[in-house]
Length: 268
Image (cartoon, rainbow, N blue to C red; front, top):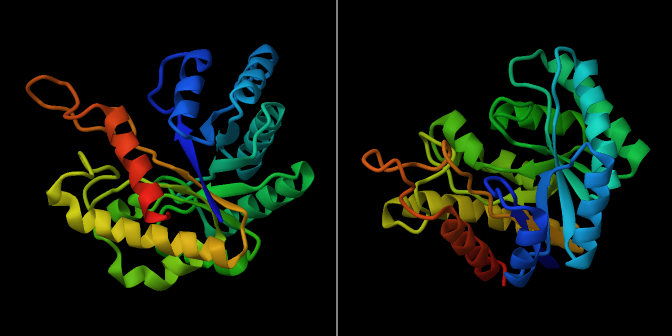
């Protein structure tokens, strides 16, 4: 099974024609970002991706007041993503403060959209969204065996305020449904450590790498052709700043590249 490394464009300000050849040369298989709404931009993006032989994972963010609003917003973004040649979707869906039945209606709507458009949507385990904690996630996975996951377990470390040693069974359930992994190390007080290379974060790095191995092995057991992985560290305010200089402690690109290579070593 391949491990396809995907480069997030979160915090990247340069245009695609500048950054895509750089990321391709670094060994990335694709990029992850929201789809443009403008038709000319979609065509340009698809042309550049084809030129540099890069895949595309679309980020979709549902919005609105009602479940119907959220599903309609997903539908529009799915159409834009498909126009850009998206391989699959990372979905920030619905919201945490809702009744379970409303969450079920949202998941059922996404399952219908997946069938309609022929594309897999990984519900991200993200704070503020449907799968914001392990226990709610387990309830939805039990109800919907065809539900896919984008696993970013750094968020759960914050929500639970611990490295969730009591959630191994749930993490295995998540691993069995994960189609995309966001590889970022979080801790009990935040979704992103200052620098995963520091010795002070040895315990956090070890816990996250254990979870990532479970996800890799579960994909292998399902006979997946590839597991997509994004080393997703974000800019400020995710990234900590030196209070004296207001500058990051380390360049964000350096941390991302370290995590990129570390993932390759883990799954070699």
